[in-house]
Length: 336
Image 1 (cartoon, rainbow, N blue to C red):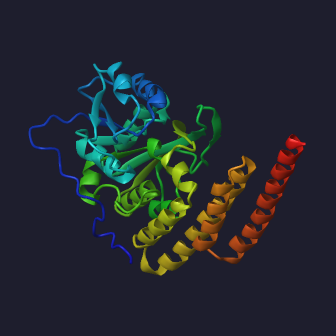
Image 2: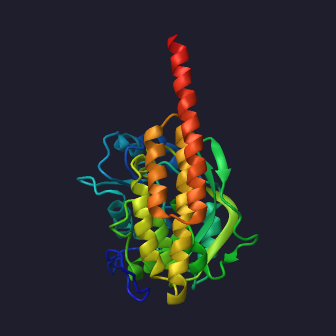
């Protein structure tokens, strides 16, 4: 099944009701059991936030079991809290963020991510161009403690609209959610996050936007994306479900591309994600998480059986097996 880019596929987003004051910015912070990191997330916004007439800040909690209310209470004069009565799951809670937002520009900032000083100034300059539908910046990757792991590739050297952004973004996920801002009117036209995608929902959204609107890129690394096992992606990697969602996202995304390019683009994307899964499998095996390693290795071969993927899978299997044997040997030595 493919999707015509002339037809929205996401849940409907209604306009802000007439007479309701619209600030320029809505910073919407979806949370689920991340009270531990929420303070630093909120602080990263407040240090550069204009006044409430220009920016609303709302935590949208998806029925967490931790004490998110206590964290927000420390910022009650500036930050609002909306708690879902029951857990909606990632795509539905992200869509709820958009529906609750009143601002002209919506920034979704997960409760375990951060923005760096200058983020809103840079995004504001980008969105001053009226034809631009969304703008994103380079992003820093951090671990669960906030320690820096790396940085995303430099996509282009100068700020500006990305040429042929649709094909560029459709090849693989290049935009982490904290790094991108979207006009609310764009969401109103194209809908919210795809309900079928428990992972890769963000990738599909950014490509959907690129099928309709110019996308702006800021080369400064002004957003921080935290990678951790308890995240939505981390949870799905343990079972290989992330790759099932990736396969579905690729199917949907291919429908946004010109017909002659769809099959080749989908084949390349499946191979790219399969190879990435094999890297995840090896990393999991390195830390002794063989459940994730096996799930990712099997999922990679379900996603693609190109020659390159098969060869990479054989190498990964040898590496995973070697690590398993070394770990087993170390355990026997400890017992002796």
